[in-house]
Structure formats: structure tokens, C-alpha cells
Amino acid sequence: MVIPLQTSPQAPWKQRYRVKMILWAQLARACKTRGIVSTNQSGANQLYAWDVTSGALRSLTSVPDGIFFGSISADGRYVYYLQDNKGDEMGHFVRLPYEGGEVEDITPDMPLYSAFGLSGSSDGTVLGFTAGLQDGFHVMLLDAQNGKINSPPREIHHSRKMVFGPTLSANGKMAALTSTERATFQRQSVIVLEAATGKKIAELWDGKDAAVMASRFSPLPNDNRLLLTTNRSGHTRPLLWNPVTEERTEFEYGNLPGDISPVDWSPTGQQILLSQSFRAEQHYYLYELTKRKLTPLSHPDGAYGMNTYFASDDEVFALWEDSVHPTALIAFPTKSGGKIRTVLSAGAAIPGHPWQSVTFTSSDGQTIQGWLALPEGKGPFPTILHTHGGPEVMTTNSYFPSSQAWLDHGFAFLAINYRGSVGFGRAFREQIWGDLGHWEIEDMEAATAWLIKEGIANPKQIFLTGWSYGGYLTLLGLGKRPGLWAGGMAGMATTDWAEEYEDLSPALRGYSVAIMGGTPQEKPEEYARSSPITYANDIQAPVLIVQGRNDTRTPARPVETFVKKLQSLGKAVEVHWYDAGHAGGGVEQDIEHMELMLRFALGIVSG
Image 1 (cartoon, rainbow, N blue to C red):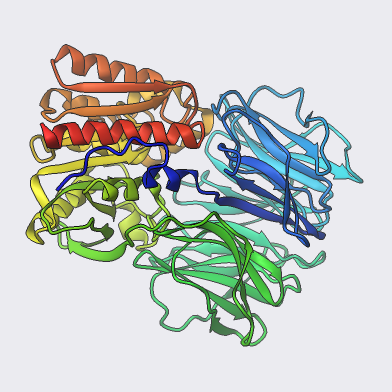
Image 2 (cartoon, rainbow, N blue to C red):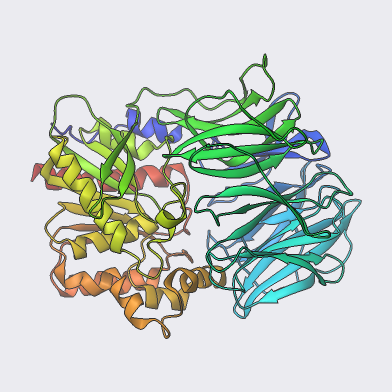
């Protein structure tokens, strides 16, 4: 039974959005009494100076559209972030003093660029980033000593194909790049260059059917070992490689199933923190290099992001959450006898409905995993089928306020890890390449059949929803399987891969080429076959689209074209525009968008 829309400002579903969460936390490598934190405590995500000893946070930024990520210099004196225009992810890296002060543009003479992050050497002497520009990807380094940027950025590598990194050695003398130059986006090799000259030292490639990715150099100044991953076995596995001697060392992990990824080096360089992902659940292990010994670590069940690292040889810091607990920074021990503790707490948890892991079989026999939550009462219920963005991420048992909003209003909720998701092996991840939207829709249809068979979902009241790639799958599903779903709510969606390509940021344009197998000119049939606009005439169910005007990942213009086409065909479509980029504009905007979706779905169910 559905529950009427709860519009009170104090409604539990709104308060879950407003609860304080720790979204990013980083320690200065050489000054671990200082750190930075990204939190939403002001209503939008902002960066804060973190006094690690006392736990006190002090505001550093007040950007209207918020900042999710930043980095702190090794000595703890400066904080860096990408300054863009209203969330469009095109701009310059800037820095400001940890103690507070004026913002300084560190690349004032460069054109605006897109970038995935800024890295630094452990000794603080070199900074590096890859700038995405119209002519490709430029790997740039800056010399930084004694708190000064000593020269304009120098380019050490340029490629028309996507490059990730650089990962810098502890002494700043080597730069490791994850490169797609040998093949496609997912068949990477690792190239190591001299930081001073850009001269190639060595390259590691595991062949055309595998991907190698750089992780981290050893933290010791004269240790050249680089931690990497390879998936040549079909699953992600860690390895050590010395680019100077080209010695390669495999890890011993017995029969541990799933994907295993390196996370961090211990400060002494003797241990490696490993993460196992198996059936969308995460577990951490300590690997002792000299003993070649793997030890499971004790930590809470739930979801852990990429922000996990050694705080010391004895303790690991990690952002932790689950479906009913907002994200907090916790510490768990690396040795027996230690205690799990909270380093930076989240706001008080508001009671909700826990998720449970489920599996079902898709059309080709492939097992698909998902997370199910049920409202009060007895089914069948109106149901939300959620697909994550990416596509190359996975949904874990995480704090997801929108799921609880649906549950509060009487909807069942299922989030699935469809084909293309990470954590289920290379074949599972790569099956969608060059054929986007085929296997994902098969998995969504199989999920729908399972929900009906289990008596969970009312067959006439199942709704699709998702953001980014999940928004794309929502629109594509409504067109490719007309009549199967009661409606769709798509946020920041791709509607036409070819038209979108023209407006993408340079970094994302490279991704489209990689996952499609070519440009729109080279692969016109593939781009058309995978685009929701191709199936616009077949859509039967009502559609709601929420879209940012400044989005450079899923640009506005193709959405405008799609909406106009639906309107010309007499389709039931609503669109809500907002003035921000792909990451959105803060907590209250998220609540506004959720209320739009609730009204939309409740109107259909009640009508």
C-alpha cells in the first residue's frame, strides 16, 4: 500500500539527506596531524582543514555548487582542488593555504582543461596531473619545493588516447602512466617515464586481452617498486613491478575468490593493504611482503570507497557506511588485539530498512547480484528497479537516502549490478563493450521477472530509475521493452551517444571512443543502436528527466533534442532543468529532485 507524499521539512526521508556525512578524508603524508575532509555539514559538500589530533574541522571552501574531492600537500601546508564553472568540470587546479588565505591558480597560463585528479610525490617535490584538451591528453608536472611552485607546468607526455595518472615515485623522479595507446580504454599498459625529461624507462603490458593499471609506488625514497593490478587471469589481481630492473613479483592469495585489488602500502613499505570484492561485498587483507602471508582484517560489514589507507603500520583509516548508517571515517587495526574506532563521526542515523543481497538468473544463464529492501506490509508492492551509474562501478551495501525515501512511501527497492559492473570478473565487465544497452537491458528484464515471480512487485507498478549511466539505461529500457515498466525517472542521462560526443569534455570523449570501439563516424550503427533516441517512437510509459545545464559528462543539448522528439510524438514526458553540473548542487537540491520523482511515481500508482 503506497503512502501519500510526506512533504514536511522534518519528514524522515528528507532528514536522511541532511544528515552529516564524511565524503572524503586525506592525511598529509609527512605531517599526519593535518588532513582535509569533504563533508556536507553546511548543506553542500565543502573542503575542511582537519586537525587530526583533536578531530576539529575548519571550513576552507564555500563554493556554491560544492566540492567533493581535494588533495593536501605532503607537508600539510596547501590544499589543492579543481576550480570549475558551476560544476562543469572544466577549469584549473588551484591551491589555498591549510591555515586559510587566498586561492592561487597553479596553471594560470594554460587553457581550461578537464582532469581526473592531482597527485604528488611523497617528498612533496613534484605535482602531476593529466589535462584533457581538444587535441588529447597532456601529462603535466610542476616542481614544488618549500611551499613554492618553482616553474610553469612542463609537459612530459602527450597522447590522443586516454592517459590516467601520473602516479609519482616517493622521490619524484619517476612518473607512471596508465595508457590506452596500445589498444583500447580497457586494454591498458603502464608506462614509466623520467619525471625530469619524459624519457621512457620501461613499459609493462600483459597483452591485448588484459589490462594493467598503476596504483602506487613504494613510500620509501629509493625503492623503485610499483604496485599495479592486472586482470589477465580474468579477475583483478595485484602485482609488484620494478620498472628499472623490470622484475615482476606476483602475490600469493590462495583460493580467495572475486577481484583482489591493491589499496595502499604501509609506511614502512613492508606490508600491502588488499581489498577483495566478491558478490558486491568487500573485505580487507594485510599482505606481508617478506613472509608472503595474507591475513584477513577485522572490520564492519558494509561499503567502503576508494578512500582507504594506512594511517600507521598499526591502523587503517576507511570511509564506511551501510544502508542504514551514513558515511563516517573509521579506523580498524592491522594487528590482533586492536580496536575498531570512529575517527570522524557522521550524523545520527535515522531508522530505515536494511538492504539484503539477492541473486537471480539472466536470459543467458548469467547470475546477477542485487540489493533488495522491502517496505512495511505484505507484497506485492509498487517497486523501484534502480541501475547505477558508471557503468564500471558497482552498487554495494551503502547509505542511499533515495532508496529509503521510496521505502518510506511503500515501494519495494531493488538495485542491481548489471553486466558491465566491476567486481564480478573481466568477462562480466567487458561483455557490454561495443554493444551498450544490450546485456544491461536483458539483466533489467530478468530482475523484473524475478521480482514478479517472488511476489515482491506488482507487475503493473514497476518503475525504472537511475542517474548518469543508470539514467541512460532507464530511457533505453523504456524504448527497448515498451509496456514492461510503468514509468521511468532518469537523472543526468545519455540520450544520443553521437550527439553527446560532440559536446563532451575531452576526457569523456576519449571514454566514449573506448567503450564504443570508435568515434560516431567510425561506428555509426553502434552509436545509433545503443541510443535511447533511436527507440523514442516505441516508448509507452511516462518519463521524467532531471538534467543539469552545466553537465559536461551527459551534456544538456542531446537531452533537449530527445525531449523535443518525445513531445512531437505525443509522449508523456516531464523535464526538470537545474543550473549545475554532473555532481549536482547540494543536499536541498537532492531533496527537491527526490520529491519530483516521488510525485511522479505516486501520481502514476494512484491514478
